[in-house]
Image (cartoon, rainbow, N blue to C red; front, side):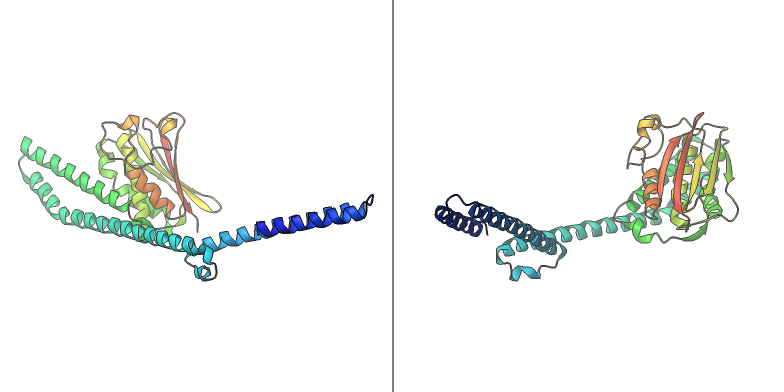
Length: 317
C-alpha cells in the first residue's frame, strides 16, 4: 500500500507540473494539487490505521483460540501457527503444574490424616506414664510432630487453587464464627492467663464460608495469643457497615513495625520480633487467601498504646 501511495503521489506531482506549466501565474493548479495531496494522505493514514487494527484483532483471535482468519490471511498464517503452538504449550504446562499441586495437597492431607491416630495414641500413653523426664520428652516430641503436620496441611491448602475451589460463602452468624475460632485458642490462652472477650452485636450476619473463615480468624487469634504477654487481653469485635462487616482481633502484644505491616502476609515471612518463636510463616498467608477468595480483604495496623489490630472485611450479603 505504501508503494501505491508513492506512485499516486508521483503521478499527481507530474500532472501538477504539466498543468502549472500551461497555466503560468494561476493559483488554481497549486490549490487543487494541495487539496488532492492532502486527501490522498489522509485516506492512506486512515487505511493504515484500519489495517493495523485488523491485524491486532486477528492476532488476538489467535490468542483466544478463534484463529479461522489464518486461511484468508496467508501473510499471518506462520504467525498464527507459532502463537497457536505457544498457547497450547502454555496451557499444557499450566494444567500439569495445577494437577501436580492438587495431587501434592491431597497426598499431604492424607498423610496428616493417617498420622492423627498414632499421634493421639502416643500422647495418651505419655499422659498415662508416671511423671518423668522420658514422658515429658515424648509429649514434647509428639507436640512438635503435630505442629509440623499442621504446617504442612496449611501449606498444601495455599497451593493449587484448593481454597478458591472449596470456599462456598453463605449467610452465616458472625458470633458463631467467633465462637468456633476462639475454641481452638482457649487452652493456650488459659496457660498464659490471657482474657478472651467478644464484642459482637446480636444477630449480626455476613456472607462467608463458616469452616474456612473460622480457620482464617483462628490464624489471627493464634498469632495474637502466641505473641501477647501473660495476663493481657484479646478482644474479638465486629461492626456492620453498608456493604460489608468488619471483624477485628485486638491484642496487647509487642506490635509490628510499620515497615512490616504489609510484609507479614507474605508466605514464610518471619518478622524481626518473631525470631525464635514457633511457626513457619504460613498462618497469615492462609488467612488472607481465604478472605480474598470470598471477595473480602485482611489488614493489620498498630493500636495506640501498644498491640495490634487485625481486621477482616467480609461482604454483608
